[in-house]
Image (tube, rainbow, N blue to C red; front, top):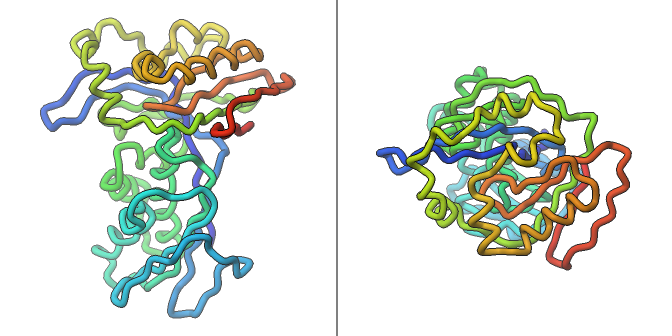
Length: 293
């Protein structure tokens, strides 16, 4: 069975304060976009074969007592495969569903990692949904969201996967009416890794001034061309100061005709929103990945 985890962007991101548990309260609009990875799961005891019998470009993760055989292809997935959120999703469910069968799992990665697009979180959340459907676990959306929160703060969004106003750590969500399907998105990832903990440290000076923030739900109801000076990402200024090329990408998107452009998450990916008929031709360095949606 296949699943197609999609990315998200942040439309505005406000860091409100630091909590006693060490996390930060934030406010943002999560918006899903159609840049997708692929996750495939087959039962190991059925001798199932992966679609197209494709060969993984990575060595499989499998131990004598592991219920998961994991392989990946596409973009290189950094870190220990055992920490991959797809495998963690399986292991979470295995605790409460001990009869969950052993599986072969393959991840084809196209969404850049550590880029502010939520690709890893989407992979984990979609794996939860895939396993729930394939093995008929009977979990409702609220239950899946509770499992997803154990994987990461923004993972519950991908269970809902609709435009949401998110607060708390990003897990407290309410739906918003926002349809941007009439626009074209151009997403540029410059290949720069921004450590989230470093990014949070840079915005600490604003944490005591929550009165300066405008409700994002109000801003997104205004015409897109008015968002430029209102819908801001608190991470953007310090990240662009450390990596000026990110600011240059944003400027180039505006020069190319973007109605709105911003960095997403803690970076380093930048996106632009264009009219559908706009012919966008951009040239950046060889390390950049450009995706049009």
